[in-house]
Length: 307
Image (cartoon, rainbow, N blue to C red; front, side):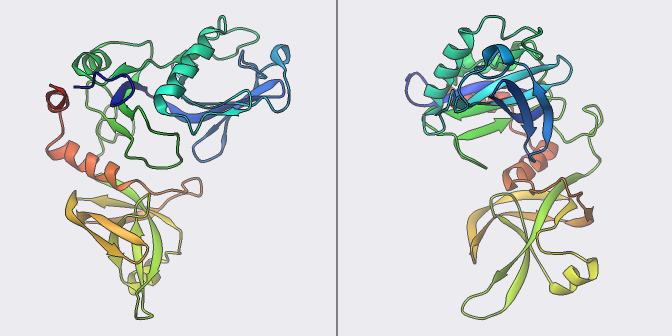
């Protein structure tokens, strides 16, 4: 059981919505989605440097990791990258969360909408990942729609991309999208995933192979050049497939600069993704969604690990 204040894990009720970064500097605030596109442009917030009334030095940049939930028109603040020009990415998660909570609590009415604060900023709560904390996160309401549960290792730094120190889990009680769905009501009939086309050079030969990779560089499938040419695929394309089943390999396999940690059955090409889709799905997500349809990990399984 996690009882140490400086080690172990924290559990977080993850909000549903648009994952984004919130920037406050030079008298205005803006936000950008994961693909870099603007979500909201030049609005006022009560963050330092986030409005004409709180203008500060040009170097006083604030960056918060948020999820914007449209139903309540609010930014749910999960993490912090920078505060008044001071980078926080090399701090532990426990330190970042303490700093974030302390700074936001100093700003009156930051969780309310007004002329100087167009969108409320709601601090997402964190609990120790023990039986009590997990049950609170699982059963309680927090003023926003949940989309699963996040687990943060307390000593993890903020890093780009995938990390084994930040995990997500969901079921039908904590998310409308525990199984992929277009509307949060009716799941897709088939499991689907997005993969990226790359090629590897086989050493010591000079042969090249085309591979479909997941986010992080995990190989999902090796594909013949005839298929690549016949389908009109190009290197770097993000391609959508349906999958009958996905599972973890008992022993990872190495292939050039990539590794293979999952195996899939019944991979069927559906079409190319639009230009706005720049990254494939992570292999852990593909396996998780496959398990959700057959043998899902339950909240009882998770709580049982903490007892």
